[in-house]
Amino acid sequence: MSEIEVNDSSLSVVPVIDPVCGMKVTPAKAAGKSVWQGHEYFFCSGHCVKKFEAAPTAFVDDEGRRKAGAVVGMGGG
Image (cartoon, rainbow, N blue to C red; front, side, top):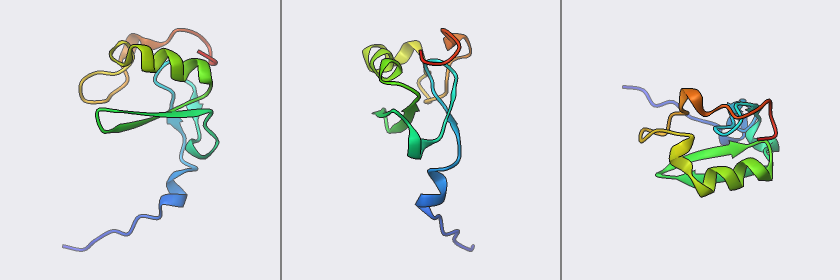
């Protein structure tokens, strides 16, 4: 079995989804980051970070996946 080398700096430019508002966020440019149950989440704004940290289970399931009905607005939380 071969090993794959991962360049962490290249991962910081791959967009991810803000679990609170659903916006695409580039981790390197994210307004905030939170770690919950071993998963890293990146956010478009401080407002989304605060909402997530107050009630993470409102936005992600036990596996760390974003809940389908979690969209609360068009960006900015």
